[in-house]
Image (tube, rainbow, N blue to C red; front, side):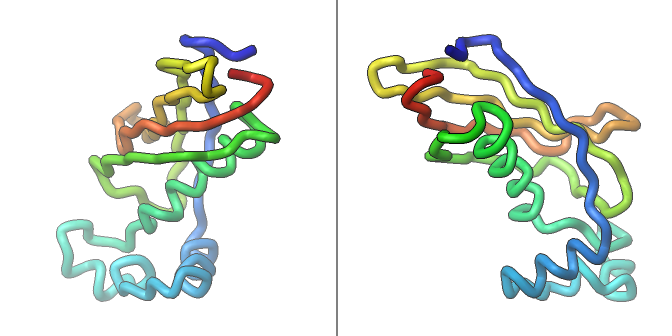
Length: 134
């Protein structure tokens, strides 16, 4: 059984090729994500990673690692505080903040930090259900 305070961390990064693949999969070809010349004229100065691609890390972890196989990812609320860029390494942190054993659900804090500077990039809260772990 998982309980309040249990946590999990994973490091990740994305390449520009992966971002370009996500453009094709999602249909989101906003040049802010792939066009260096376009992005240079924005406040970000270079292409940024799609928020949905970043959130896919949450989905992967929830379904495969923490809580893991058999879990149902019910909800995600995310605040993107800073842009994420290709080629940098980030750390995603997860912590169970509450559980509801009667419904086999938990609320899990989901955060992304830039590894080098330790800055909070994404702050969020997810809900998951797992019949055996909550």
